[in-house]
Length: 121
Image (cartoon, one colour):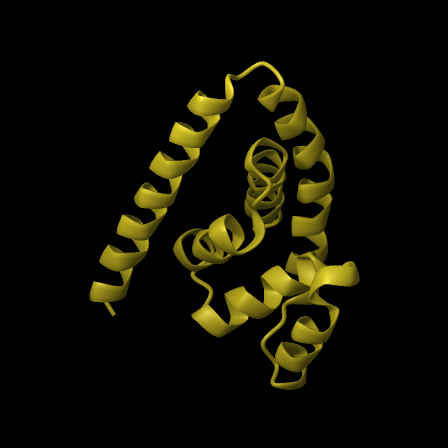
């Protein structure tokens, strides 16, 4: 699972650098789909990864209810740190309209995967 969390964090960092997003749009669905986290654990863990300063109070509220995996949060944060730089560098070579289209496709694909996953539960 260490590699999975690091790769999710790295992908979220790349998307953050490319599109300015990564947390809720990638980390939460990826934790649900790839790490089999329940939704609340995925939400709390994502906030833990984005802890300072963005998610501190939100992560604390989830932690109080036992819905944060601190180890996974730290590993995701490590991936985000390096991935954001890689994504930002990639974005510099891609035309703005192409980035916008890539982002739209990504959102649709993630939405369909979450929709299908929810139907199986």
